[in-house]
Amino acid sequence: MTDLNEFRAQTRAWLQAHCPDDARGPGQIPFGSSKITLDTDTRLWLERMADRGWTVPTWPRAYGGAELSNPEYRILIEELTRIGARTPLTGRGVNYIGPTILELGTEDQKKRWLPGIARGEGAWAMGYSEPGAGSDLASLTARAERVGDELRINGRKTWTSDAVYCDFIFVLARTSQSVRKHEGISLILVDMHQPGVEVHPIRLLSGASPFNETVFDNAVARVDDVIGGIGNGWTAGKRLLQFERSTHAGINISGAQGGRTEASRMPERIRAFVGEPTGQIREESIRRGLTDYQMNAHAQRLTQARVIEETKARAPGFASSAVKLSNALLTQRGDELLLEAMGTQGLSIEASHPAHQENVEQTKGWLYRKSLTIAGGTKEVQLNIIAKRVLGLPD
Image 1: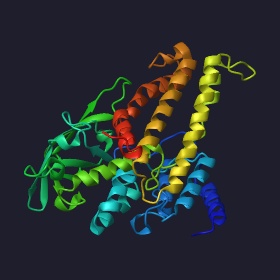
Image 2 (image 1 turned 180 degrees about the vertical axis):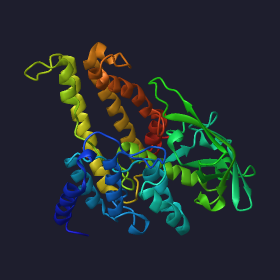
Image 3 (image 1 turned 90 degrees about the vertical axis):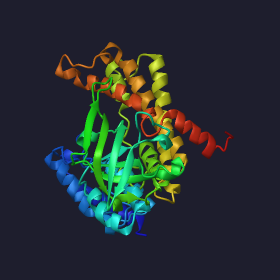
Image 4 (image 1 turned 135 degrees about the vertical axis):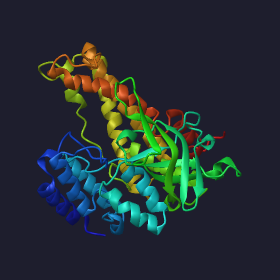
């Protein structure tokens, strides 16, 4: 392993020289979509980081990564955070399906898919839930029938996040009716640029449409784009869910986001609404809430760092459910605290003046982030996993 002090110095110097000014601080973050135009510096930042293998730092070099060790990975995240650099690439490609292919895919699948994912060439949607099969994936009804070297897929998937912007989708579909439910499922990679795939947005309370229903009508996929082999989708699909939950928890070292935590702006944001000229927060309940929030946020960051340090595989096991849930609850608590400080200014989702736009975005974000205890596995599912798999409690 490289001397870590030397690695930090080299990393700091390279980032300082190559991270564009407009890629620091809030702004556009690519997730691979061919349907979204990137800002000039955002595109440049992505290209530079991809060339260095730092969009997927721990992946092998042969597939677009840099083969960083866990300690080197932590240093990279710390140095990115130090200069306020935005994540160069995110999404289900680098964080969910990419790590799954890396672990369970054939050599041909790795060579065909992973380098493009590492470069941000195509955004990915997730085709798991159905109108009648949400958390109970064994009851899914989407079918994939083999015809020669192809699979013909028919069925519906719901809550397919960002599908209107995506180029590919990984789909759990039933490839056999004659075996037990868990054994007749396959995980299939599907190109969305074909007549057999239609996407219908689902409007939410926040006014946004990140979720969609995706309909497959004789959509075509290659048989050799089944990950883990035909009939092994239950195993492959569950492993992918661990990568998903680890990403939500900030501990997925196999992707582009794990361990990334920006410094909290909560104190100054709250002071903007209820602070005295001296900077003191007037209301005792808000002071107490902010103190509790900051202590919990610090504990969360320490837990993320510890889990990353202890992780031997590319994603933690069942502990990711605990960290994912605590992360979601902490984020929601922060939103509630800020809304409390905003008072009546937090009640509108339309700005009457440009100066109020940030307040409106916070309110919309509060509404959207209510989904954090649903997306990536509901709060109830995570509690069941924690009880059974982490604590060892009986059924």
